[in-house]
Image (cartoon, rainbow, N blue to C red; front, side, top):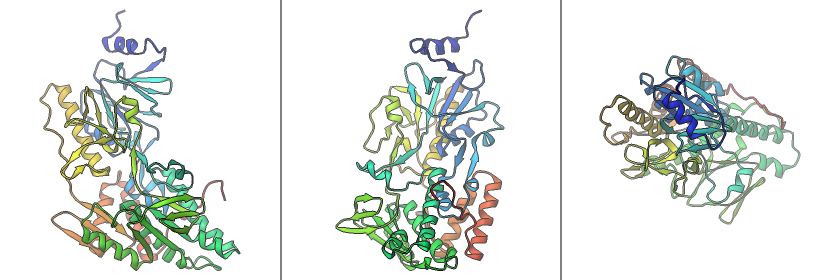
Length: 441
């Protein structure tokens, strides 16, 4: 029997390795589109390809899509992980042309057009790399051992455990110096994640936990937000940065701008020449791209991002697209930021490019990002919103921020759950997810 052309190509690609192959999607003769990562970029690409004449395979090392903008609320006990995550298979279950593979990508064979997942290979005709980012420590990777990052559900629950345990151990501790270390929380990085974490942590200490302890006063917790740049929220206009700083000060957060962390250990940080003792140091100072550049065998910038063409394809390999935090794409004011709206628009755009290729139609115009604005919240009644043509602060901005985040959540159930949790928290000052889990109790 004659072997189909696509199958002969897959066998040829792996002939020298002896590694067995698995099919990319349902076996057949249709083109194979493989998407690495089911974050905002990858998932939007997959959904946009639901009607394409192709076999689409989505590969992710986790079985869920995570709404990262609200991950800090899991870390501060406002929401449960299930409120901001949804199973990838469930999201894509109605797409007959789409399969999901749970696994960790270890390599990409750009010559043989195959993705390695350990000893397995998934062949592709078109590849979309949307593998996201990780924390960047700017040459001090050893700080990862003593700080807490916030990229995954596991990170968020570990952070929640550390924060809540700090109050518990301070309640039972007799050493006043250690008690102060436990009740001092340092957040490094004054971008949206750092600002929102600081506000949520202040609200947790001063409202949700205020009456729960007998030997300590949670309101005395010290929260320090450190930003190496001259102001918080550098992507926002200076007036909104100043408004955010004032809002944080009102709820008791100490802000330090224009100073950088120079040392970090399990007992605190050095900020310039000042030592801040703390048992909980949270890292929100920057991100670096996933190791996709190494997999693709291309040079990357200092942040690990891969330079791409105007259609987000890889130079020399037009069948490979790189999007989201992994791609370095020029914008009107420098490289586009690694935020959810950028990844979502890139995912939808690449799907249009792939669909046009499959249908033999002309390619769409070069990718152009449409900036619909920036939002950040500070506690329960404060936020800043920048739509360019309109800037808001205070409670109205907070309502806009909340409405936007509920709207963009995946799934009706999650939208309802988050809205009800927020309403309950707003009316009662309580947090419904104050669970300490794990083995280090």
